[in-house]
Image 1 (cartoon, rainbow, N blue to C red):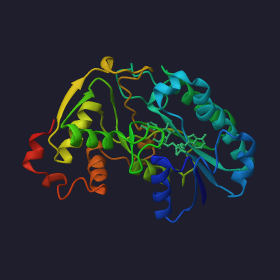
Image 2 (cartoon, rainbow, N blue to C red):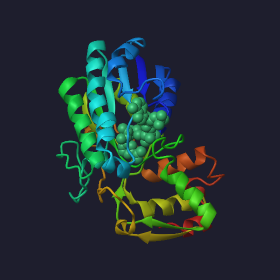
Image 3 (cartoon, rainbow, N blue to C red):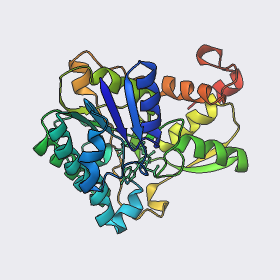
Image 4 (tube, rainbow, N blue to C red):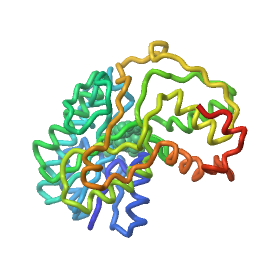
Length: 304
Ligand SMILES: NC(=O)c1ccc[n+]([C@@H]2O[C@H](COP(=O)([O-])OP(=O)(O)OC[C@H]3O[C@@H](n4cnc5c(N)ncnc54)[C@H](OP(=O)(O)O)[C@@H]3O)[C@@H](O)[C@H]2O)c1
């Protein structure tokens, strides 16, 4: 199978390339400088050079507050370009894997979101992601739309300049104390796990919309506590409300995604958040010899 990744320099794109190559797939990974998906006039021609069977679109414009002030750019990358990509894929008889977000929901449902729940976005970013999903569905039946949440990966988000785990480690080491939002809750998800899940998915013909997040849910405050617990860092973590943050765009407060469709197919390979976080910290050498049951008592005592 010939696979082409777009937005290949991002945190998900990087892990996807590695996981797919490790599985001996034929992978071409293109960065924005190699293929800008908003350049619709060259999209078909540039993609056709690689004869893709599946195109995996990891490109996104997602600094949520900037999106609120720049709807044109949000829609250009997250929606209009997705339609152009779908049209090109149709010409090339390729399938598309497109990633979407928990931000397509308003977070007011009070239970985890299922794939069939109606999108209710509350920000420009969220609306642009819903539009991207709809445009892909309208053009190309052979699609996988994979919604996920709270991604962190080894490469760090390119667009957001880092990831939450790295930010917490840096601030914790620098200051010994952090203030973290405790009333926004989701399933924080490892890009490595998501990449493995996508590898399984693309070998099926079960096209459609999926939720794929790691299992469980934490507020950002709770997740920060876990990061310090597993990295044995003494950091004072103070819970704060999102109302104290200088957010421009509204955020969903409870946007946990349930992997209903993957579960129904017997294909849910995502992991508990704690397991995934410890694996990430270990791969970054942050957790020296301190996994699972061998966690030190000092670290245990700082558990939530
Ligand atoms: N991060 C999260 O917490 C999160 C949560 C839910 C869903 N998701 C979804 O997961 C997917 C991947 O996110 P991520 O965290 O891996 O993002 P990321 O690390 O910020 O990477 C995004 C990539 O998109 C590229 N890009 C931006 N504009 C482009 C364009 N016009 N043409 C081609 N490439 C372009 C960027 O290029 P440069 O490297 O040149 O900047 C960057 O490499 C997205 O669909 C996102 O909505 C992410």
